[in-house]
Length: 218
Ligand code: B1M
Image (cartoon, rainbow, N blue to C red):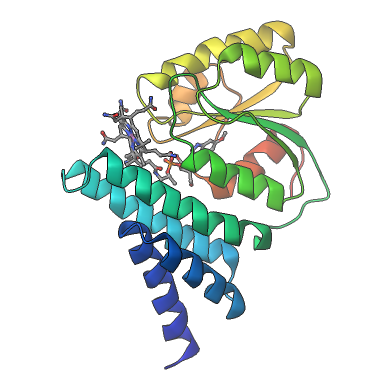
């Protein structure tokens, strides 16, 4: 077996373990990818995340329901916890502060947790407010932390409507604050309409977007 094949097999195994919500298998394979020297980012974005995309398809085709989604999500997070400390990104000389959270009424936090992992790996201080976050919490935390960036995630067409309210409340306190948004129902155009300063389609590009809003590059 060539090392390329074994890497491909490991990533495929991780995808399958997420789909089969086999938490132990997922953890074992994530540990093995690290032992084999495979990049943690690849294992996250070509293994765990691709597995979750397949889970979303199974949900859409009504082969999976909410209980399976929860189990698959737990499996993904179990693998992410093992891989996260080994993530390497281009560490920039800029170490910013970011407040992160998922909007009120929305408990989808897988994407937000991937974004968090990327900022941590880039050396940022991350203040994670979690999911279902009331807009007042973003405002209170910003008053305390004075972060460079506030990152807001929303996964539903309904919950994303909380974003313009959060932007308005945050900008009313400090018009210079920079807000980045992301999540499946959003795009750059909607982000602009909601008054956000930045948008990122995926966790990988969120750090770069933050840096460019701060007028820096990695
Ligand atoms: Co639900 N859910 N869910 N769900 N869920 C969706 C979002 C949905 C599209 C499924 C569908 O119907 N096709 C749909 C929303 C429809 C709409 O828009 N109105 C939906 C629904 C309806 C619901 C419930 C109402 C179901 C119910 O109870 N009947 C309920 C809502 C509960 C609530 O929030 N109040 C619900 C519940 C759940 C679970 C709890 C079971 C589970 C979430 C577990 C968890 O997150 N801990 C779940 C899941 C897993 C999904 C799907 C299948 C997968 C989402 C996911 O994790 N994707 C989803 C279907 C789909 O998206 N196709 C669906 C993988 C993840 C890596 O991608 O989160 O997009 P994503 O993150 C990406 C980018 O978007 C981006 O980077 C990430 C990685 O690159 N990104 C950012 C995200 N945030 C960012 C922030 C940034 C930058 C980039 O800067 C700040």
